[in-house]
Every structure is written in C-alpha cells, then in structure tokens.
Length: 543
Image (cartoon, rainbow, N blue to C red; front, side, top):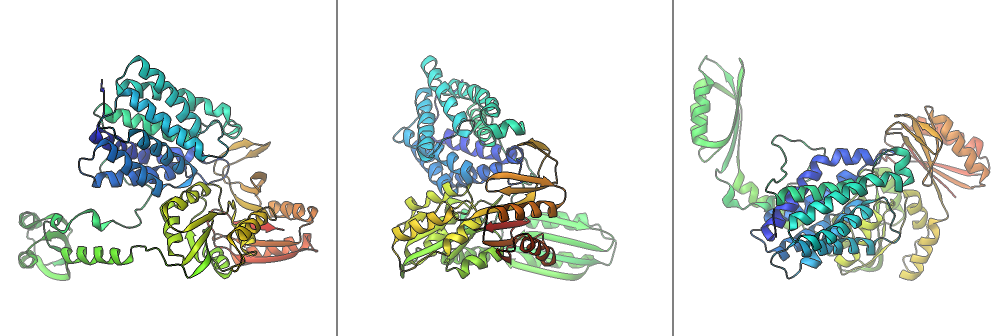
C-alpha cells in the first residue's frame, strides 16, 4: 500500500482524474438533465480539471508544492459552471495545505482534503446539502479519522472514497429535486470520480483515454506553443492524389514512403492513390509516385514555417489588459446573435458567448474583462450557473470587477436599460441590482427525460414552460403554454412584454406567439425580437 506521494505522483493523479472525468462526462451530464435540458455538469467539470492536466503535462518533474500550485491556478482560470468553480476551490485548498511540503503522507493528505472543503464552503454563500459540497465534506471527515488509524496515503484515500460513495447515495434523499428525479447529485458523482481515479493512480493504474476515443467536445484551438520546432522531425507535409494508370502494387510505394518519413497514410482503389506523408525530401516522394500514374493534386507545406508563423500569430493576438479610457465598462454573457445585438445596442462593451449547456470559463470572462478599456467593469452572467465563475475574475485582474448576479438574459437586459456611464460604481451597482427584481422571466424549452415533477407528469420531448426558476407547465402543444403564460402575465398586471425567439423558431411562428400575447394582454406593450438562442424556443420578459 502506497505510503506517501511526491510531485510526480500528484501530477499523475490529476492527469488520471482528468481522463476519468472526461470519460464519465456524458454520464454526469445525464444526471444533471432534470427537468430542463441544461445538463452540463460533466462537461464543466471535465473542461475545468483538464485545464489543470494540460498545464501539468508541460511541467517537467515538478515538486509536490509546484504540481499542486499549477493545478490550482489552471483550474481557477479554467473553471466553468458552479461545479467547475467548486472543483477548482477544492484543489485550491489542497494546494494551500501542500505548500512547502516535499512529500505527502496520509495525515497531510487528509488535512489537504479538509482544507479544500473549507475553501469551497467559504466561497458558497448558501451551501446546500446533497451536493458536491456534502460529498467532499463527509469524505474529508472520513479521511481524517482514517489517518489517525493508518498514515498510509492510499489507506486514507480508500476511506475517503468509501464515505463519498455513501454520501453520494444519500444525496437523492437530501435534495428534493434529486429525489423527484430519482438521481444522485452530478457534482458529487464527479468528485467521487476524481477521488477514485487518484487512488487508481496511487496504486499504479493510471486512467488513460483509450486510443481512438472521440469525446463530445471539440478543442477550440490547438496550443502550438506546446511543442518546440525541434519536435518536428520531418519538415514537409506532402499530400497528393494519383490517377492510377497501371497495375503496379501500391504496397511498394507504401514501403518506399515509409522509409522516407513518418505520419504516412496511403489509401487506394481501382482509380486513385491518395497519399499523406511527412518527409524531408518531398521530391523523392513525388518522383517515386510518378511510376503509378499522373498527379491529380499535389500539396507541400513547410511545417516548421507554419509552426513559427502560428506561434508568432498567437503571441500577437494574446489578450492584453486594455488601458482605461473611461471609468465604467460592461461585459455580458449570452448565447444567440440577436441577444448579443440587444446588449451591444445598450452600450455593453463585450459579449461572452455562453449560457445553458455552454458555460464560459473564468478565463473566458477574464479575457473579456481585460479587453474593456475601463477602470471598473461590470459583469452580467445572466445565468445562475455562471455567477461563481464570474466572481473569481476580480482577483485575477488589476481592473475593478463588479459582478451583477443576473440569473437570466431578460434580467441583464432590463438592468442595462438603467446604465449610467457617468454615474459612480456604487450608484450603478445599486440600480442594476434593484432592476433584477423588476422583471419576470419565462422560458419555453423541451423535456430531456421522463419524470414526475411538482405534480406534472413529464414525458421526454414535451414542451416545458418555466416561470422564474419554477416549472409552470408542460404540454405537447407549445400554443397551450404560450396562452397560459400570457394569461398569467395579464393577471399579474404586467405592462411591458418582450419575446425573444430562439434559433429553432421561424419568424412567422414567433409572430403568432406575439399576436397571442397582444390579444390576451391588450393593455400591455408587446415587442418581438429575434434572440437566436439555442435550447430555449422562447425567452419572455414581463415588467
């Protein structure tokens, strides 16, 4: 049984945990899909911890303190969604406790797990039971007791995992929403996945991504600075297609090209031969290929030159902190080009693409803030699952960052109508915050799974109407929900109604929805705008 760990061990443990969460992310997402299709806990946790794994892979033989610090810093910047932020806080506490340590035994590891829990709880204003916080807290408590019995780090980790499993199973009883859905907490399951993968690594069995694995996420942009130009063994990427004119066996060409370079791919049929190869002598490759027929296409690229140009381009485009040209600026999160236009027309300086199922990271928000030429930058998350990630930004930039806790896009839009660029930070903060309570938000989406919730029998694919954060109704006919919402708005005496229709709704359909509201609410002003948002067919604000 493993007694202690060092920096190399910690590095492998985190990389192993990142692989395990990546492989489990779809399962975690499905736990989170209730009743609205915004399940993204697995994606958020995977992208968050993989930010740490990426930086650790670049670190050669780090000390324990350094490995933990790299992990904490990367996870903080890469944190997405509440689950990702809490995960980053758990590792921030671990890093704090491991500071100055060359190795870690069971006692220190138990203390580090507890420090992580303390960091997470301090950051959450109203900790709820039956979440990742509960699972991590009880696991850390079991680790401390185990360390008193046996100081081997693997023994302590096994005890933490055993308790985490019990705590996770109980989350279904602690959280009413989970109980109705019949599922355990997705974030807690994610933390258990991390703990189990770390133990597996301690035992010499690192979790790795299988060859050929294709995840659900596409890497937005390759980091070309990850490798040096010296890592490019062969200079020229050579590709060509030959129109076959004889019966020569292409296997002979394959053998020749294999001796000439690497990354060889040769595909042939009765009509053509298609080749891709990296080589230092493309002339020889082409000369040999001529014996098989005529060239249809030829492409040769200097990979060393491409690498140099790409790195220089990335350095030139690296985000800089804009010098203040004004006192106040604003950035807003939203998904949909129509909604983005609305915010820009209201004097928002920058748009961060994101929302349901697409939570931006703390780094994404930081970069947007740094681009704004203002001393103070207000941030509108417009989603309850983005607020925590936004709140981490202030500590990462010299700019003053004020997060307005908007939970919906309509709240953000209503608040921006009150923006006074000449006012003080305090005045605008007060006005913004007050405006959040002036608007009611309604949303229509679809059910992601069969369930029984708040007395509603929900079937997968049904239309769902949300009023605020509560389920308002469900139906197979969206017109029925629109009519019920309009009647609710009329009865509440609302005077201004704005309907934003999503990317899956045609304008003529949206106009019928607006006409319905105008008919049922004759005393209200009804506006129709294209939002272009995904997931939600309609976002409706009423004031």
